[in-house]
Structure formats: structure tokens, C-alpha cells
Image (cartoon, rainbow, N blue to C red; front, side, top):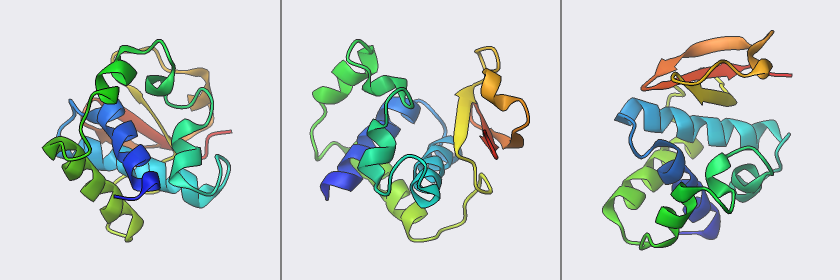
Length: 131
């Protein structure tokens, strides 16, 4: 697995491992949509590690600690990497171009104002056209 793909799969693990498959695929689409957009850099690694974008990469986040012990051959990690590969290969983007999402159990972030709602997949709400 390439470094870029591994970082994306680990991000997906931290952000969506408890989601149903369509929710996991939707988050994978967000990672790829952000890379295509270029606002967060031109690689999956830059997208995933962009400051303050995926809280699970924050040093104090418990997800990060759990992920750090995850083997590169972990079956779930391999499954999630295949979802990222599908998104990269142009498989159907269930989010229709979403670049942002947030969990249904938190209050809507300010960035949703003026954004286009793309749907709910699992326990996450997805948006594009975020300014």
C-alpha cells in the first residue's frame, strides 16, 4: 500500500470505522473530492493531514492513539483502503462532490451556512460549496 493510500485509509479508519459501508465510502469520497479540489493540497496525504480538518489526527485525540497500533495488514484497514481506491478510480461518488461532513449528533458548524447539502450517509451529513 502506498504511503498516500495508507494515510487516507487510516484517516478513514479514524473518521468512519463505526459507519455503515455507504458512510465509509462517502467519507472516502470526501477525501478524494478535496484532493481534486486542490484547496487542501494535491495529494491524499496533504488532504488528510491539513491542519484542523480531521480532528482524529490531533495529537490528543483518542482515535489517533488507537490507529497508531493498527497493523498495515488489518482487515478493516485493507477494506477501507479499497474504498479509497474505488473513489480514486472514479467509482460513483454517492456524495455528489461533497468536501465536508459532520456527525448528526453535533450542532451544525458555521460553515454549513450557504453550503449545498449533499445527503446523509450513515451518521454523517455531507456538504459541498463550503466557503
